[in-house]
Image 1: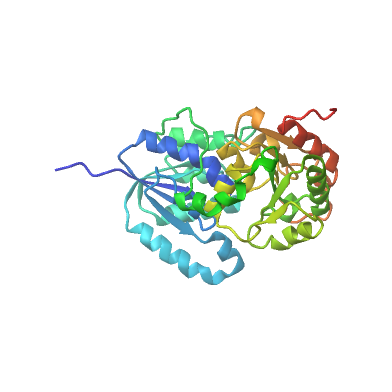
Image 2: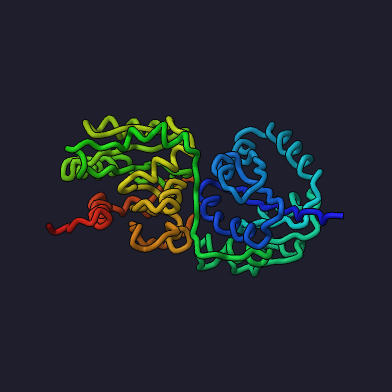
Length: 355
């Protein structure tokens, strides 16, 4: 009788950027268990990206953002858990950090409703009492998020490799959007620069007028072509910026799917962005970027790529890191001037700022 294939459930109910940062950890689990059925439970936001990872066999969507807006989604969550209970997993691995007592309780409840021989995760806020293999409570302290998740993956039997984080898209995407990046003779020296003025929290968003200043400067001085990005709900920010920029601009906010966004960012000469999912996408596709950090600690959440491919602009303030969803006094962002961002753009475009 043939041996039953090992079945592994990886849990990462988090955002787009977190999924991208976890890609090397998930790949390491595949390296460690090449013949296993690997399932991923992630958010509906991140699922479209996860479905393109060849080392994941099944993607399950947890409607966390939808549930926060409308509690009726509890029925979808119950149905999801009942379907997962039909599978007897050999291992269930929570890659994400346990950051609060409430988060610990929620993860304990989820783990208790699943059938799994072995349970693995972050030993913090009491969660370690309910799992079999646990990373220490300091796993996510003073360490990049991607490296911390890798510690948990290795604990689960993963095998690391020399690759970094990854993101993929379908061939149709290139055929659909390639026209945006075609240059004729007069445009060969033109830089195509993306600007992402949004972010999943308002207190991560730099002032749109400052993005306008930077964009107009780059257009005037380098004949740059600007492509504006923005996800659902961020269209108004992009439209405002568009209204202040008279030429050389294409506004894609709210017009592209997530997998299309990855390809488009891969074609930029430079991306200027808030701390956000698109920042991590740029790092994954090796696009040079300038990242503007507000409340988060850039040491822990910086672009996970080589140092020559990114610059960070941030200010040391006493209130960082901050997990507030709203802040009336975003001093961390207000102290960042357009001139500082422009200086970093010069560096990434390999131009001498004094020249």
